[in-house]
Image (cartoon, rainbow, N blue to C red; front, side, top):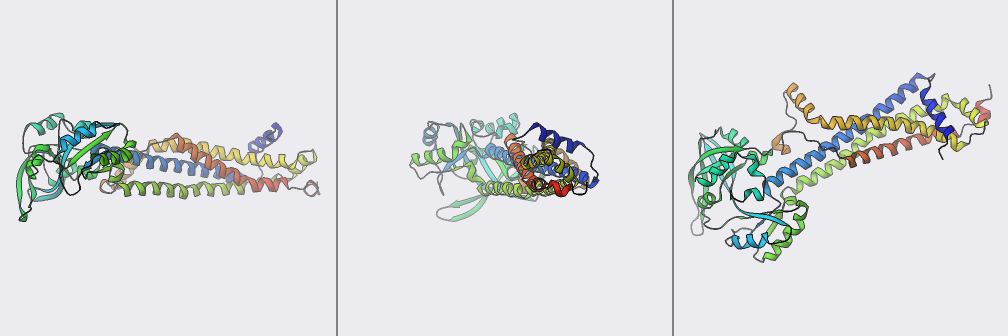
Length: 415
């Protein structure tokens, strides 16, 4: 058990000047090393958390929680199915949509796009897309035909401004003739949108659902129904159950499946990075071992005197364990404060470095977003600090054991 005498001696050893200045330097290096390791772990974990959170938010905002559709076919009875879906438990709302591939051309600039026909009256119930669009432009989409809203990056690639006209090249197919000559449809660009995800901003064109049905010859049918639940976590189980209950060959894809490989890779990368960066703390713990060994060698006579005064081996061992623990706690505290502050400033730092060196670390076409988010979670800090603390305690055991084995007679032989 911790006795006041052992605590007093341990803290006194930490506060007194040592003859061996190198030991002082190694102790300081240990604190800084542990602080660096903990800080880096917190920053990396926070960035990973923020990255996953932001990408999930953008995906949910554009794709809703689940999509119901018939593979290889359109949905003709969608009004009936929509009413049935909205009557299900935990379902907030549903909205029909049409999605098809096409090409846009403007003054020789050609881009392949995903044309999405939306119901402007119900779109806000299943996605946050209307929040990224000017209300006047969104209202105009429903009032007038042959209007289109383009993603910001797509508009820049096509060199299009609001008010310009683009030509949509829509494919045509018939059961008798197969592929036919495509349609060339002039569309007026009435606005742009930016949702913060490159996939959507660079590859989506929005039209009204009625225009989409006319462009692609779908009549009164739609591609499917987008569904929003009261809680996104319910989507994987509830979406599949609802699709099975519809009994019309309808299948469901929930938001976790849209980018399954991406989320799986992100979680795996987070675990691997955590293990690798934990080695920084382990290396700093070796410094604790080195400094404690030097302290034990320096204090061997003091240890011998304490032993002759009746201090037991366990108490001696506890003195040096406590010394190492205090060094570890100091480093952990430094790391937690630095890491939390560093995570909050990560985006600014990256922006400054990118500006200085004229490079782009966060490429939107690779990482889905064009900024560096961070989400500092208390549970991550507790886990990181606990692991660092355990490593520090383990690092003190060998030097403390060596101190406890000091023989008083041998240490005081020449005194």
